[in-house]
Length: 377
Image (tube, rainbow, N blue to C red):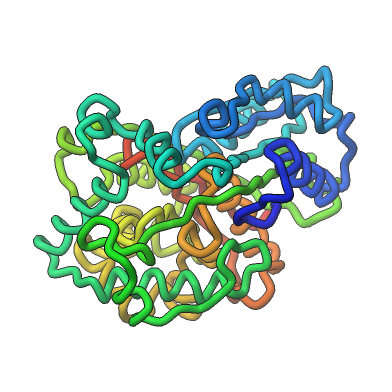
C-alpha cells in the first residue's frame, strides 16, 4: 500500500507504482515473472482526466508488453479487479497476476467529487433529483432506526472503534482516536449522519500478487489462500429495493461465499467491511450473518466488534479512519486480511486469526463482492 490520505506530493501514477513495487518486493519476484494485471479505478477520467490506465500502469511499472486491464464497479472496483485476477489464475490462463486499486480524489473540490461519486447510484432517479450518497445512506439509517430502535450512539460507536483501530495503522488517513461526543456533536451532513459518520475523500493505492496455491510456497512470504470469491447485484436505485435495512447483494454473495469455503459466519476470525458510513457497517455485520438483523447497532455499542471482541471488524480502521480512495479500497481490505492472517498487523493484530473475510460494496449496494481468505495449511 501507499499511505492513504491527501497525498499532495504524489500523483496517480506515483501511488499505484509505489503500491505495485511494494507488492512485488513482498512476494520476492521480479516484474518479468508477472503474466497479467488488473487494476480497479472508479473515476480516473473525471477525477484526474486520465483514461486508459491499464496501459499507463503497464508502462510506468515497467511491465510492457504484459496485458493490464482496468476494472470498474464504483466503490467495489478494487475487489472486482481482484476477482478478475483470481478467476484468471484459477482458470489456468495465467500463473502470476498483479492486482491493484487506485484513486486520486483530492485534486477536486468536495462538491465536484460528491457529484462524481453520485454516478455510482441511479443518475436519473437519484443524483439528478438531489439524492447524494450521504442522503441515500441517511434513508437507510432512518429506516433501520425505525424498525430496530438503532440509535445515534450506536452509529457513533462504529466511528469511535474504527478510529481506535486506525490509530494503530501507519497507512491510515486518520491516525487519531475520537470520542463518542466528538461524533455526536460533529456537523450534520444528512440526518442522522454527521460528518464523523462519513468516510473521507482520499488518495491512495494498494496492490497484491496472485499465484496458484501450489506455487505459493516458493514465494518469500507466507502465502494466504483465497477460498471463496463471489459477487452479486441488486437494483441501482434505492427506491426499487425490497428493504432499506440491508443489502440483498451482500446477503446473497456472502451466503454463496460461505458455501464455497465450506464454513459458516462463526468461523470468520476477522473481517474488513465496507463502512462508507457508520450505518453501512452495522448493516454489513448483519448481512454477513455475524449478528441477527437489527442487532448490529447494539453489538457495536457493546464492543463486540472491537479488536478484543467476538468478531473484530475493520482492524485497518475501515473506510472511516483508514480512508476511502474508492478504487483502492477493495484491494486494501485484502492486504489487511493477509497481514492479519500472517500475524503481521502489529498493534492491531487479532490473536490466532486463521480465516478472514472482505466485504466491498459498489454504490449503495447494487454490487457486493465477498472474498474469504485462509492461512495456507
